[in-house]
Image (cartoon, rainbow, N blue to C red; front, side, top):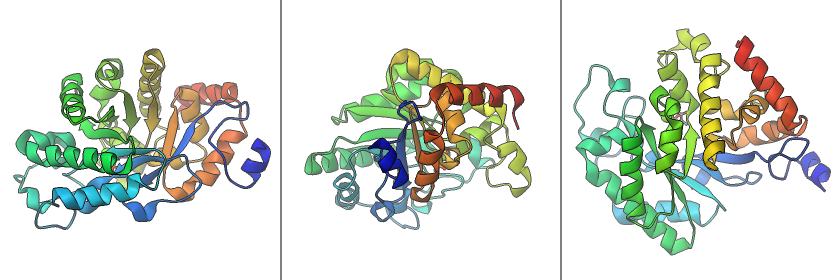
Amino acid sequence: RERAELARGEGPGRTSDGHPVKLLLNIGSARDLADGAEGVGLFRTEFLFLGRRTEPSLEEQVTAYSEVFSRAPLVVVRTLDAGTDKPLPFLGLPQEPNPALGVRGLRVSRLLPGVLDTQLEAIARAADATGAEPWVMAPMVTTAGEAAEFAARARARGIARVGVMVEVPAAALHADRLLREVDFLSIGTNDLSQYTLAADRQHPGLADLLDPWQPALLELIGRCAEAGRAAGKPVGVCGEAAGDPRLAPVLAGLGVTSLSMAAVCVPAVRAALATRTLTECRELAAKALADGL
Ligand code: PEP
Ligand code: MG
């Protein structure tokens, strides 16, 4: 049956010897939902906020989140990731000379805690309304203290599965401490490569540094996965790297438990995993860590 599923481009993600690696979708709204994956690994909620003069109301948010929760078996919602490459005029944040290192992602809640609280409330109400149990995570978390504070705010609203994204090298280095505070990690390789290699993710001339095969990046990913294994908690990858069929076996070999990507990438990643045993994936990972690009 597994072979028939694979031939049809269906079924859960797994290596040829049956080691599971969940295949999940990155979506920006319900319109991006598609068949063939095991759920949503990254629901970017910015779509509701971008291009607005005013904050979306609680009711508007409940409706938008409910639509996604009612249609996918598992949804990892990311709270608002504003700043730098995702500017939000209505927040009225001060201009900064170095916005990638400024008030962005979870840090916005230092200045405007109400925006996050309303969003968490809307997620909790949408979960109640649909009977779903969404996982919720924060972007741009740097310290275990930030993770603990976010987790407390989310759990106070009854959200059961709380995680954080690993996008900052400090968070990857302290993945074990983060995992004492939260239930899962999701590695955002787009930002983690930007901050690890000190190369603007939007800079076309620095593509070689931003390449996800950079061994320093892979080493941080492996460190997070190892912390997840030790804690018995899931650690996925949701940056663009997760949708690369050549890299997917390497990421599986490093120990990540899920890969979240655009729907178009799912079939090729599923096929790439299915042609290798877990041992072969580990060998590829060891080689990538040693040889790099
Ligand atoms: C990432 O940084 O890898 C990520 C998934 O988040 P975004 O691309 O939305 O910043
Ligand atoms: Mg990011």
